[in-house]
Length: 202
Image 1 (cartoon, rainbow, N blue to C red):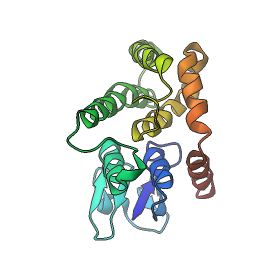
Image 2: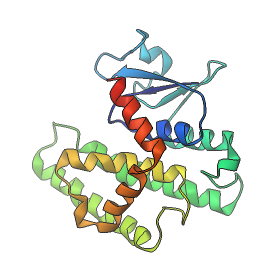
Image 3: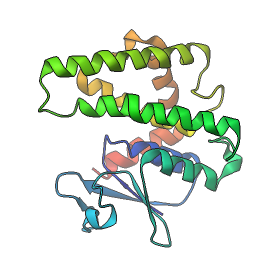
Image 4: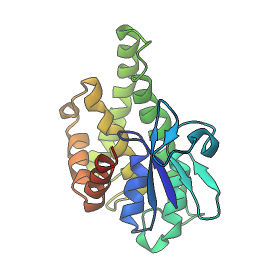
């Protein structure tokens, strides 16, 4: 498998999961400006959407969209228990959490990268985002991970997008459970390995 990634992007989440599962893969950097890969290919020919993450399988198929990639990877090694079994009520709950992160946290933080929005508009985005942080705080006050007491693919995803808060002067100390969550996930060996590998590919 090949994982197409950009540093500081949401592709960090599947990168973490690949390492958690100890799956063999090749890491290929994508330049977001030129849409060229580190090995010289046209990324738009691989993923016409033009953004990471993209996972290319051995048969040439390409899977995009983080939540889909994360679930695909987890299902390759079900005994690792990074996602509940397909068809179970717990799996539906996982999908609920992944959708919440994707639309309400990832989406809101992603808007803050747009330099065309004036500060007043970004302040409104942040106000909505902070309400979502309050919901996450309620969950993480009661348990260490989003689905309970075990690390899952949802935790890798939330950790990844919450790392962007520092780029926008959002201090997670305002939400102690979120700050503790980031430290907890950040201490995992697979996370450290993924971050180091992405720096090495910079």
